[in-house]
Length: 107
Image (cartoon, rainbow, N blue to C red; front, side):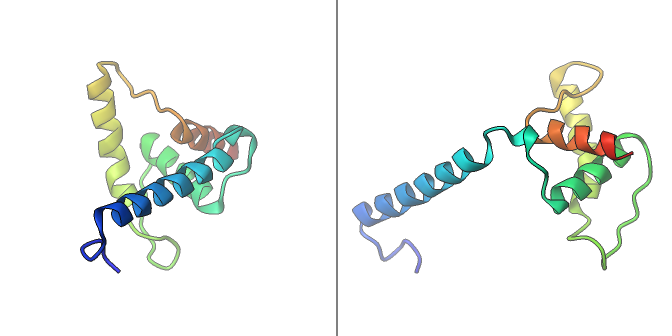
């Protein structure tokens, strides 16, 4: 059911419950994130992004991956971040840094 038929207080309650569930999920997932094993998709994606940032070519395989968007957007996002930071390279943070470290270890 969409929010159009809900009263303002019901809409507020729905948003508050969603936010509480999302924050609870983050509270469970984020502590000591670097000490936990990555989900398989995260590891594969980190490996692919690592290859792209190292200048290697990536060929999309529809039978093996979720979609080509990450491979298409990762180099552009990295380039944009590098220019926005005013440095010669972007400084990844959070999960991106953890994924790139894991990809480097996998080689």
